[in-house]
Image (cartoon, rainbow, N blue to C red; front, side, top):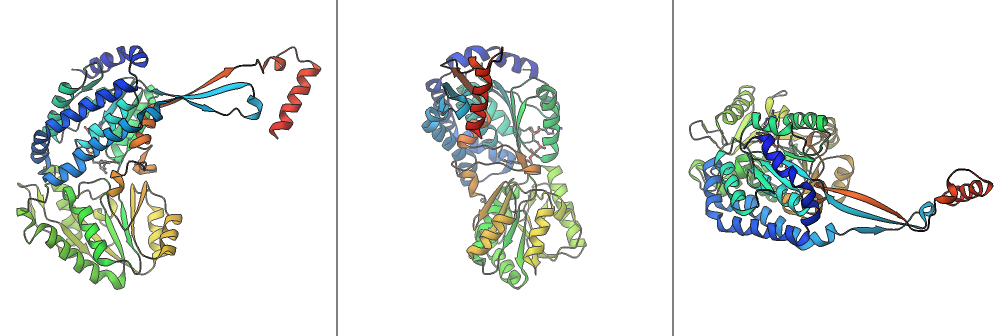
Length: 464
Ligand code: NAD
C-alpha cells in the first residue's frame, strides 16, 4: 500500500475513533496484540536470528519482554492516565471549572531502526494505541525478516483501519513523512532525526525523536572494578554492541586501568568463551556496510598506535567482529568522534576527573551516561555537573526496562520521552477545558464602569 493510501485510510476514521475508541476497546486491542506475540514467539526468534543472529535470551529480554510489559503496564494504568483531571481555579479564575482531558493526537507515524527492530517498532505502537491513536509503522528495511514478521503479525492481530505496516527504505520513509500525520515518533540516528524534524516542520506535526550518539562511562576512584567490568561487557557486547544506550567508551583512573582491562578480558572469556565466533550467546553485525565502517574505525585506531587488549578478529562474510577492547588510543580517531555502535570498547586512562567531565560537557549531550562509583559525594558531583538523556549508576542498559522512568534523549540524543505514562503522553494532547459557571467575566466587559475598574484593581491586588 502506498504511503498516501495508508495515511488516508487511517485518517478517514479519525472522528469515529475519537468517539468510539474508549479505554476498554484500547485494552482489548492491546490484549489481542499480546496474544499474537505470545503465539508467534518462535517466528519472532527466527526473524531476529536471520537479521542479527540474536540469541534467544536477548530476544526475550530486549525485544519481547519490553513490548509485553509495556502492554501489561498500559493496561493496568490506562484508566487513570486517560481520565479527565479537574484542576483548582487560580484566584482570578474563581467561579470557573477547569479540566484537562487527554485526547489522542489522531493518526501517527512510527519509524523504527534495525538494531532492536521488533521492540522499537511495537513498543511505541503500544503507547500510541493506549492513547487512542491510529498508527502507520515503518519498520527498518535493514532487518528485512523482522520487518516482514511485523507486517504479518500486525495484519493478523489488529484491525486494518487502526494499524498499517508500510515496509520499505528511505524512499518509502520520505513519502510517509510528506503525509500530514498528527505525530511522528522516530527512533534512529541523529542525522536522520534532523531530516524527520525538517519534514515535520512542513506539516507542523509534533515529534518524538529517540536518537543516539556516544554514551560515555566514567569509573571513579574506588569503583568496584570487577562489577564494572561485568556490567560493561554485558552492556557493550550484547547484540554485538548495536545498542543505542551501549557504553560507547570508558574513562578510568590511570592507576585502575590495568585492573579494568584484565577484568574486561576475563569477562569476555567468561561470557563468550575463547572463540566468541562459536558462541551461541554472541550476535552478528547487521550488514556489510556496517561491518566495513567498524572495521575501518578499528584499523585506523590500531594503525595510529592503539593497544589491542581483547578481540580484534573480523570476518566480513560472517558479519562477525569479536568483542574488542582497546587502550592508548591516538588523539584523533573516528572511534572517538562517531557513535561506535558495534563491539569495540575504547578504554581511556585519566588523571583529572574535572577534565573528563568538562570534555563530556563540551560534546553532544549523551543518550546515557554511566558512572561506576561507591563514593556518594562523587555520585552527587557527577549527577549535578553533567546532562544526559539518562544517568546509570553502577549499571548499564537496565533503565530501558524501568517503565516508571521516562526514556529519551536530550539535544543531539533526542527530543521527548517514551515508555509508560511518558509514552502515553507523547501520543496525547492534553486538552484544557474551561467552563464558566457564574459569569465571572461579565463585569469586566465594556462599557467599562467605575465598578469594572474597581473589580480589575481588586483582582490585580489579589494575584499580586
Ligand atoms: P537510521 O536513522 O539510519 O534509520 C532509522 C529509520 O529511518 C529506518 O526505518 C530508515 O528506513 C529510516 N531512514 C533512514 N534514512 C532516512 C532518510 N534519509 N529519510 C527518511 N527516513 C530515513 O538509524 P539506524 O541505522 O536504523 O539505527 C541506528 C541509530 O539509531 C543509532 O544512532 C542509534 O543510537 C539510534 N537508536 C536510538 C534508539 C533510542 O531509543 N534512542 C534506539 C535504537 C537506535
